[in-house]
Amino acid sequence: MSTHLTNLTLKIWRQEGPNSEGHFETYPIESISDEASFLELLDVLNERLIAEGREAIAFDHDCREGICGTCSLMIDGQAHGPQRGTATCQLHMRKFTSGQEIVVEPWRATSFPIIKDLVVDRAAFDRIIESGGFITAQTGGAPDANLIPIPKVVADASMDAAECIGCGACVAACPNGAANLFTAAKVSHLNLLPQGQAERYSRVEAMVETMDQYFGSCTNHGECEAACPKSISIDVIALMNKDYLKAKFANRKELSRT
Image (tube, rainbow, N blue to C red; front, side, top):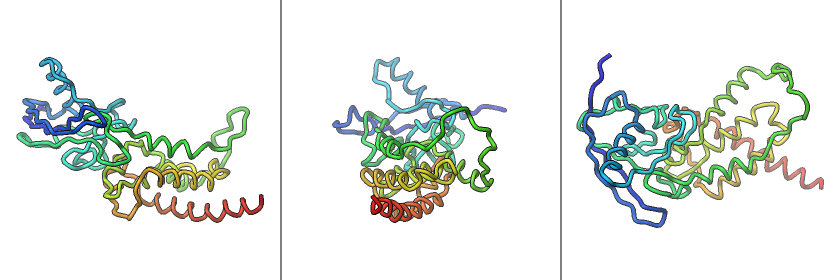
């Protein structure tokens, strides 16, 4: 299979720090392989900048296999770029045409303040996860895998929700800066399974109300599902809303008994 070389122009957001003024800088890229990933493209550019004695572009990356959720770029106005169901690290140059100008920005959301260049602070996601707490698990030896019967449709739905990698594309794509898809995926992952039932209502109440402290409201635009690199369905948002409504009644009853 032959490799084609592509010439591109990158228009990249540069910002020295959280309190600095940001601006775009333009960088020509010559003869990049169409087999290179988008992050490899930035690596090539950074190597050139360092060789020229200039400061490298700061961007998040880790596993580069679409698993960790670290890569977080708006590419031509689209979270993770033009290819659906793909993280930035899985996007390759063959999706672009030679001579094209590509605009690269960090996530644009108030809840994700810019740290430097293309790096944002996604600690608000950590606060949501922390508020979810734990699941009740008996101590002792590990139980047999088939000890708790779980219908396949339930297990599949839970595992689909568990695919969320917490990248934040849903927030960046949402016109309201909402985190409902992320939160709903994390809630549904546990709330669908028997092991998650003991804390089901306290979990969803705490996570939704923590989410509301940092993020905007969901108005069902559906951009989150379109931008999600794991193509998680907005059905999980309906499940979360249903559980949250039940939680407000269930938890209120518990309080009235005390």
